Length: 309
Image (cartoon, rainbow, N blue to C red; front, side, top):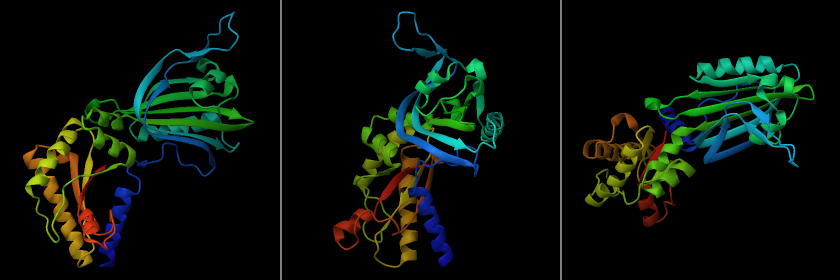
């Protein structure tokens, strides 16, 4: 029983700990790196540099003006970091290793430059991070892309490095376009909940105690969820069933699995949602939505959620 419960706890942690967590680090793991700063947005529109950054200041301008030869506008989930590395590493070495690393994850380089060909470090600072500065002859940059399902706009990864006081400093940004697709849905509430928390509690899909049977009203609610899933078919989801704390813990685990399966079956068989888009799980009473001390609280805990995969 302990082994079974451990598996459930691990699954719960995976599903609810960080719905949008990185499957793998976007920077090659290295014990000699120190995170200097970070920036995260569940959704943003980002202009990514795909060409040299030039000084285009006119003679009569009071301020310096910089412009990238080319940029790509991408929308999605944004994770950006600045790292400092030990002086024992060279910029060339880190660039080479990082390119090998992302190639192993399916990324392809769409633009790269080095040293003078990248343009002005002051210009890169404006486009990337205020923490970026250094020597024009020690800067390197590449932009990589990984396509998502069906060749749709996928994930972009930018990597800029320069040397600060003899040590490499890296600015790296990932923009995951999968999550931009969620805004295509007409139901703003589902989109907002998924983007902000990774989880959507399907409303009015409740069960009687010890039951996994969907009533007529619950079935009607699932039409809205099905429309959302069909419009966002490139994104996969978990259907996760829950129970209250009445009864045996193992029985509740099995019951929550049946509840998730009931919702899954309704979405697939009645509303033609693709099987490959969904997986269903039960986590029993381990993730209560409300207190189990009242009947109202227990009814809220007997629920099913849609969780981004």
